[in-house]
Amino acid sequence: MTQEEFDTFAKMPEIDFDFQYIIKWFHELGICENNGMGTTPFSHKELHSWRENMQLDVLPWDISLLREMSVAFISMQEKSKDPEQIDPLLDFE
Image (cartoon, rainbow, N blue to C red; front, side, top):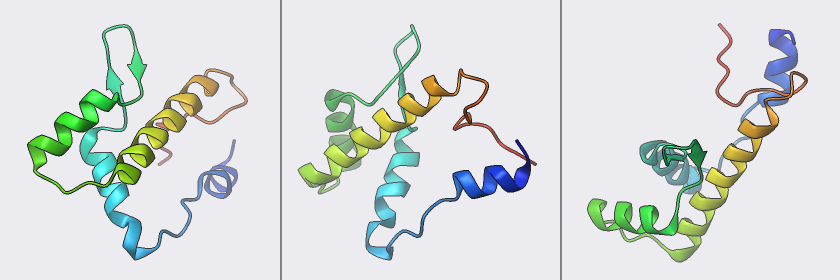
């Protein structure tokens, strides 16, 4: 896959300013968990602990969205084992 093909496929959509906090939280959390047997999506327990530790007023909708983003990442990571798919962690120079 060329850089141009990757850029077209993996282009991050425009994110409304009101929702940029979700991306920030997602990266602060670390995108996914590692349970010793591999990567897993964030558990509700992990998200609850993070919210409590950070003393944030997080809506239930935000928690659901963060978990779904983590689930989507893990799904893409699994699919990337196929040589025809893109690894979500792949970094082109």
